[in-house]
Length: 277
Image (cartoon, rainbow, N blue to C red; front, side, top):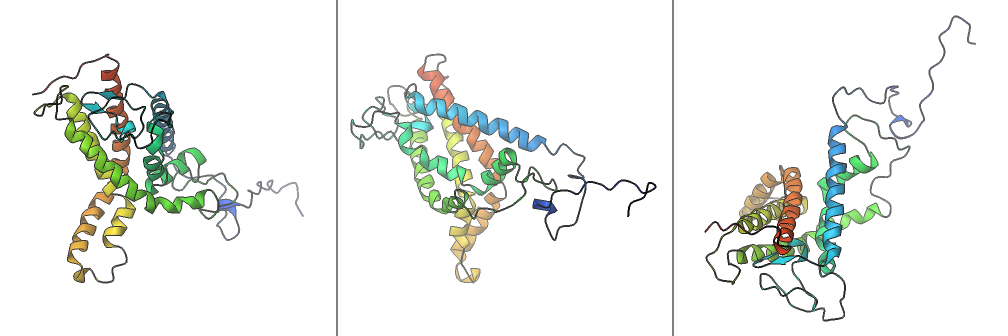
């Protein structure tokens, strides 16, 4: 029985999440003294900015080609309503019935690859859903179900998005090579746009090949590396790339936006492409 000399009892934290049965009772929400909130805040700002920009560009259906450069958001262009492009694949396979922006035809493939990426999942789970907001910081949710329910169970198809992502990377590589032509489509040209396109595809390949799914394809399910020396070397190489997967994820995201915006500036006549040689 409580007496007047006893201190008041502390409020009992809700018994859910990190305060669930079997967990050590800790009254404080966290014991971190650093700016742990900075990383998820930056993630929210950058991802939101990219989504807004990419959505605007994908639906604008304009200013995505400036000879000899084509925006990575619009390649390959497979509709009849594509601009008159000679810089990249432009086969009107969809005919004239497709009246929307050509970018929407393949938008789901690279979007699905990045949306289900292991690193991006960690980033936006923490930033947007606070699940958890940071290491050693309790999440506000009372229950945890992981990725066992719809729609998060669909994250498991990430491994299948890897294959079309490779195809898209090959096409963007082709576009980058064609960037070594001038506006009259003559070889031997190199402008600032060429450098931007080559840098972009290099980062896209680094992100794609450093993917966890690619690493598993190279060396997964092997019981003996010594019997598969080629796959072991490929696995070792992709493992080194995988260690910097986070950096490649952000760098390639920025490079895609930069490459598209540069083509937009050229197509609208706001700038001219500086010729390096």
